Image (cartoon, rainbow, N blue to C red):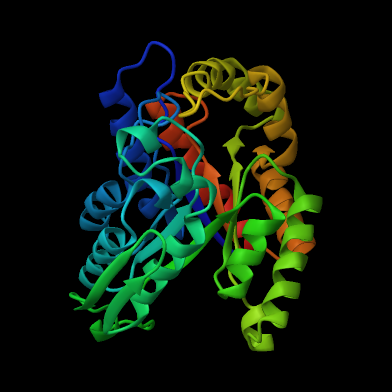
Length: 342
């Protein structure tokens, strides 16, 4: 089992954007000091839900400030970027960090981002498979050409070429955010591990892993690759000496952030969207994830891993919205929870 932190650079009510980004950087640095395995960085545009607009850029900074920990994106949004441009950045980080970079990608949402970056709604609704395949080819092959609906260009050399790196893998791993049976199938057919959202519980995650294995086997992937796929589960972690105290910390801070952050999303085509009730959503997260005493948190992580087959965790540790409390939360995760997990 591998435990890491999930960093959104969340801007809580009354905070500035610089404060949110500073907390994000510090929590990642402390994660390495505390012995965590990884840091996963979210990416958002134009909303205070998350103030990091480029997960790969923040990953580059953190790879330069750390020496051991794995740094990944959760996720880089493919419909708003060119897959070759993203592939070049991923290859660069993979090679210069000694293989410590992981590239998580996803569809994002039907947000105004698609208008601002000029990619259009089709990039979100139908273009994700083509973008994903081009990205993976760029990270695996010495040269690439394209002749698809969205991308059409002559053969060019891949520079830098990830396979030349002196690392255990030929290129950076690619993880796909999955929220539907269709996205599970898409990832499984390509043999790519999933990133599963923090809004779903163990039962649904277990069903998604089972569906992934079914599609992966049908696509001809080796049995050992199917069973050993290192899926990632996103969640929330808040540690206190009493479970009620941990939950209270989140219930005081997160609803305000969720209301402000999620409410700021604007759809590109004016479609109506329903926002979760912030308080009810926070209560749901407290019930699904390791929120409580160190022993309870360890037991919850172990149970989720056993029930779902997921071996890696990306845990939101900044739910208090406070820098000092976030640092303490990360340190307790490393010192008081990880030892129980062996």
